[in-house]
Structure formats: structure tokens, C-alpha cells
Amino acid sequence: MAFPLPRPLPPQLPKHLHRAIDCQQGAVRAVRFNADGNYLLTCGSDKSLKLWSVSRGTLLKTYSGHGYEVLDADGSYDNSQLCSCSSDKTVILWDVASGQVTRKLRGHAGKVNCVRFNEEASVILSGSIDGTVRCWDTRSRRFEPIQILDDARDGVSSLMVCEHEILTGSVDGRVRHYDLRMGQLHVDFISSPITCVCFSQDGQCTLSSSLDSTVRLLDKNTGEMLGEYTGHQNKSYKLDCCLSSKDTHVLSCSEDGHVYYWDLVEGSITLKLPVGKGVVQSLSFHPTEPYLLTATEGRVQVWGAEEPEDANEEGMEPQE
Image (cartoon, rainbow, N blue to C red):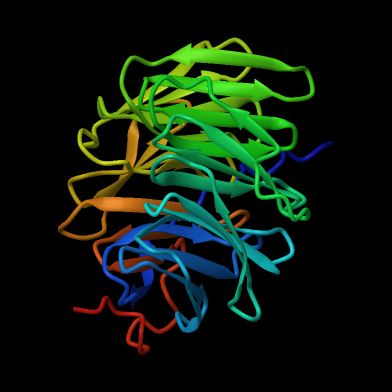
């Protein structure tokens, strides 16, 4: 006689505040986990990029070299390099250990909204208000991009890279999916300016948020709408959305000071996480574990699924 398998545990959602960090770099424009989730990056309106320990909340290094506020950043798979982009129209490749600028990449005609490494960190992709995505070879000494994607009719607000595929979102209301191996471009028209795009963990779907206060899940290959998620506020700002590490929930920042969680399949709001009084500008989900980073005004919060072991421990309580 076979015993029935135990029912799977419901997915754990990061809802307990583990740590609040006062970044002291003006408004935090973006917060990002690194590749393994042990470190976090904060992009400041004071022109700085900072690297922090997630577990201790301590500042490890400050990277200075941009001429205006830093808007996005990414870490390489081996944690040896960082890339960042700024309103100063440049992209910078950094050496993590020394804090020095390895290369400063110029070519965009306006502020650069988003930046990502490919998986081998051999290419940096940057998306700009000038409507282009530029691909830069990190290993050559050439100053020109190796490729320019100029299909967008307005600024590129967000991009994501997965193996041979590039996903971009634009203010022109279109999500563009480039398959470099097949040489194909798929375009999905959303009709409202796109603020953020990402792939699902299984690589079968795309998620996009737009200024009509809606997050949409689309089939990557057919463009079929699989889900619409509403209830949050996103009418004015470039806000992040993402999927949980197990693809069970959709998350989005909101202009009402909360992060919203929706059940991916049912589309219902599972959790409305109160973060702060102001706009929650950015978020980042841990690559494998139920941890979440949020950024509002000048602070970053680290959230976990379990209650912190000692809630009174220094650094665990939100800082006034």
C-alpha cells in the first residue's frame, strides 16, 4: 500500500522586516541583489553606487565616478565586476575589489535607465531614454558598442537578459522580445508606457508593469495574455515588478507605500506589504530564497519569510 505524498507547503512570502538600512546617498533609485543573493547594490541620487552585506546590513564599498544620479546597476556572475548607468548618459564597468572604474562607456544621447550583464559578463546591455539598447563588449578596448537595437520609438525604460534572449520595455507601450539565436523580434503592444519587464524563472513567460497601474503576464512565444494584476498605484513613476523565485507570486512596487503580492494563477492580492509613507521605487527578489529588498526614499528594507531571530537586535528595527 502506497502512502499519499504529503501536501506541499504553501509558498513562503517575505513579509517580516529583518533590517532597514539608511543608505545616506540621497534617494535610492534602485536596489538589486547580486547573483548569489549575499550582497545588495543601491543606486543613489547623490551619484554613488554602494555595495552592502545583506546579512549584516553593513556598507562594504562605495563606488564614485558618475556625474549625475545612478539609475540602475547589476553584478557579474562571479561577483568580480559591477556595471551601473546614470542620468549622465554613461555606463560604468567597475572592479568590485578595488572600487576603480574599469571602463566608462559613452554613446547614449540621453540618460541611461537600465543596465544588465549577460550571463558570462562578457557583454553589458544598456537601455536609454534615447530609444536604443546598446551592447558593449567588456573584454575589448573598443569604445563603440558591438550592436545597437534601435527599434523602440521612445525611451527604453527596462531590460532583461536570459541566455540568447533580450527583453525590453519602452515608453512607446511595447514589450520587445529579441531572440538573438533565431534572429527574431517579437513585439507585444500594451498601449501604456512600460516601467519594468522581466522573464519568469521557467523562461516561458514575460511580466511587464505599465503606467495604467496594471502588471501583465504574457506567454513569451505567442504574446497571449495569461494574467492581469491590479490594485496597486503606478501612474507617474518608473516602478519595479518581479516574480517570486519559485514563480508562485507576482510582486510590484506601488506609489501608495506598499508592495503588492498576487497569486500568479488566481490573480488575487495575497499580501499588501506596508513599506513606508512614500513611493516604493524599487524591489528585488532573492534568486533562490524567500527574501525581498525594497527601496523607498533614502532607505532600503530587507524582508524575510521567517520572523527575525531577535527583533530587538541592533539594525533589525526600522530606523527613524
